[in-house]
Image (tube, rainbow, N blue to C red; front, side, top):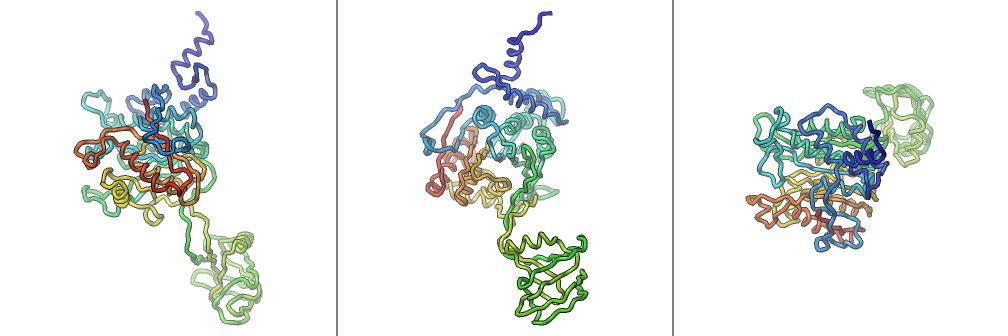
Length: 471
């Protein structure tokens, strides 16, 4: 048998992993990334066409970016990118300059609802002339084959601390979770966030009214850094006692603790609330609404002495309001809370209805079905933010993510950059968008991005964008 030569091996690699070659030279680092990604993919979700779908992620694109200066704004200085074309090709081409560079990705792909009424194509069930092996393939196979290679490439674009958010409804939620576990690793799963998309759900089902959509969240390499939700702005009083805590002693400094107790000396002893027993270990004294001597209490406290000392240094106000001697604290400034997995108006996120009204006002007509509110995407990106990072949406749709990024920059003076990708998919002739003069979804995206850029010019560091077409 004739032994393989180095050239034979290189030729095999060219055929199987063309993306690992650059200018006909093998890039070992790129090959390593591809092989690691392949090894990462090993879950039990299977459908006809899965292997061919996976291969699409590793074949070279035949397209190139073609600059369209007429559709760009400040193309000579802007670092924001708008791409019109198939996002699979766009992601492959972006890897050359943006591998391991994206801080966060938000996508709102088609939901595979089977609906014929959306501007966006949203029916991926197999057609009658397609050969499928089982009902699962019929309902889900095409959609899974579409999304699989794009999610594989999304992981390669993310920084190690990068995060991906994927909106979905109940039709593909279970399958998407398995697919993301497969690509990102179950150990990097963060949560399934439930977003209250409406306050007026349609009364169409005989079983339930649909109020929620879902956002699956993964981090490329899950770390121990806390996600940041909303920051409490109004002062509130919080008790320092907790039944599940062990008994310990806290010493509250003199001339610091506020109270409503009249001026008097309070002798040491036992004091009782409805739920807790407290022991005052030494006499103390109140004068003019302040404890003028140390308050040495023993009880089931949430805080340790070092925590109490730190909070006092931060300016946290301590109260012992009544003779029951139950202490509480009040902050005037709070750190951001870890976000709950329910997203609604209580955390400042709007609904589909409000998003539709805002978009119609911006564009002069209702041209997009169920656009996501920018407030949702701002909230999600804020979980793990970088004011100098690059953010991406490769199912750009109505362009909500671009508006979200620019508004984040407007708020804090940040230098976030965005990359958005939208397919020039034809709009149905019987749709309001067609009646308004739009012929492709990418035209709607471009219109919104242009409008927002014009509105925020001079208010953010970079309101422009470079418009590329895939040719």
